[in-house]
Image (cartoon, rainbow, N blue to C red):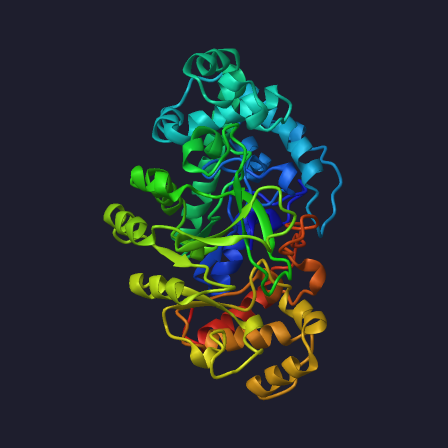
Amino acid sequence: MHVTSLPTKYGVGDFGPAAYRFADFLKAAGQNYWQMLPLNHTTVKTGYSPYNCFSAFAGNPLLISPDLLCEDGLLRKAEVSRVPASDADAVDYDKAAAYKNKLLNAAFARFKDRPRSADYEEFVREHRAWLEPFAAFVALRRRFRGRLWSDWPMALRDRKAGALETAKNELSEPIARERFLQYVFYRQYLRLKRYCNERGIQVAGDIPIYVAHDSADVWSHADLFKLTRDKRPRLVAGVPPDYFSKTGQLWGNPVYDWEQLEQTRFDWWIRRMKHNLLLFDFVRVDHFRGFVDFWEVPAGHETAIRGKWAQAPHAEFFRELFRQIPFAAIFAEDLGYITADVREVVTRYGFPRMAVLQFAFDGDPARNVHMPHNYNENLIVYTGTHDNNTTRGWFERDITKQTRQRLFDYIGRRTSASEISWELIRVAMASVARITIVPMQDVLGLASRARMNHPAQSKGNWLWRMRPGQTTSRLAERLRKLTVAYGRA
């Protein structure tokens, strides 16, 4: 359940009252985990995808709650009373961003007139390594009206000390605004996380393996990526043809220069891991196989078909990771085309892996790793993920008659579209997998319109919103009863 999907009057979910009500629902339903998508600063250019962000560290200001800003005295209630009308079922990011930016500007104006608090100063000191380049990047990007940083004047593109210092002096107020927004974001988020933890709910996060070229990370660490002399991507990331796309997926992110990363003892990546493990109780590493080998495609290609596999120094990376973070609580997104060497790395380090029930009823049931009778305990089972259709939508629109019959044979009876998600929730909970994660759309039994993401489709994603009042006490009791029955409460 991503934060943007929470029901609020502001057009997009945030860390405010609806998030606390959702945590209360999870507690009432006997749940132990709330998994979120990445919370990073999204961009209009990439369709507000949480997997293609301005920064691997900075939080998304859209998730800041105006209601909590009112509680802190940074906004007046009159300022949040006239809210533009919004679709109850879908986020309108552009409208929400325009409205919230006005509120955040007003909050910053009040904050500037206050003495700096000790916790603000501590936040700036603690996060200086990523916060300062990020704030400068956003301020410069706004100065150059959204132009790619690789098109900025050469001295700023290449981060020449004199030019950068001059720009920081000229843009001191916009830079201070970005520091403030990050401070508020993390203050509100960590308050929510503490509320969850106090109620026995662990928060699971998600690390996208790649970052956007148009990001503070690539601008400030250009040597860690395979770029051309003029700082454009030379090779870009994706995956070859798979379940989701016959032409593969061309993500377009610059790929890492792993040789250069190794020379730094993987400093940037390990700082990123530490940062996320402070924010979350445990973390899913998206596209885990990219730490072992990765698909790289020459920049400019229209599809991912003509890429090639390249190796990453996984043994050296994980040795250094566990030297610095001995008990790193991470699990592997190992879906799609997984080779023996990737499985070997997952097994060697004991990473929990994933299984998805929507993939279970195709192929040989004796060999299909998504079939519950083939599970081991060190596994997290999903009915579906944000990249899948909802379970009801999958049942109604995506599967063949043969797959449907295999499903009926497995659960021992026929079932309807309205009940199929609960049948698979039961199958997941009855399995030996250590953890069961269920998309909220499946708890609500929603059809295809509630799907969160269509891989390889650039528009129409990340839009679903839960309606107010859908998390009823009756629904919580139904979920709790099943959770208790299978010893998972």
